[in-house]
Length: 302
Image (cartoon, rainbow, N blue to C red; front, side, top):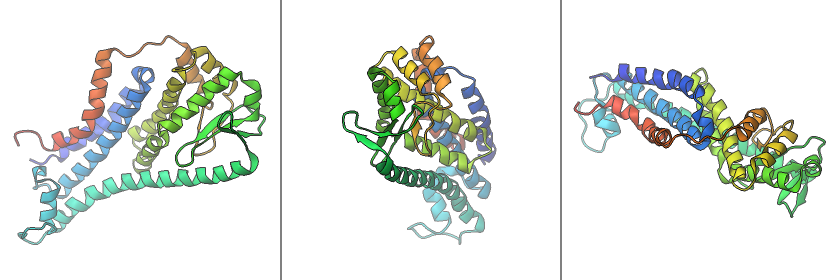
């Protein structure tokens, strides 16, 4: 049985229907780490689905139970004696899925390398115009707008404007710095690079558009929750209000910015954790969704 129709139908569900359902749900903002995991799982699942569908479209008579080893043998690349010479369809059955996966991985690595280079250049400029504050373990930048951001990755750096140092109380400033430290410790730049890579390859897909946007928002909420482990909600929200006008340079994460109002409402509003049953089901989905394309392609008993 050729699984291409089922795989394409599943791809439509994951790529179009699932992101619409996710954006209309309230639970991701109540459990942002789990929400980000589900978005990433959907992206991985869609990529694998497209790769498997490409295999089935290229070689509709081959069954995927043979796996990659079977495909390699079909193309004459196995270690054992092969049968007839591989056909063009056999070679496409290997080349097309590899192209899909390579495009995603390559795009991820491109965005990661690009932002790494941007951050390195920005750090060099900070060394010229900023002042290192050993007490706060940050770089203080002369600027009239209160702001703070971090440059994650290799030689991570947290930057605060001198206006923020003057304006915020000590507790507010500490909450802001804990927010930025959460970004660095969580290696959030890797997740954002993955979302960027997926959005580049599948740019017109609703999953790509909403996934990139929501991943960025959820990563900020994860950092907010990291700061809230040590600070009252009012302290962090007040600091965010004072720094809402601050913007992060490219490749950085900032406590202010365009998502500040949404996050302040979340912090100050009623805090309701998702029901344990919902949390458990979504955690299971985050693990299972990337594997579902294999089940669709190779249903049990066939």
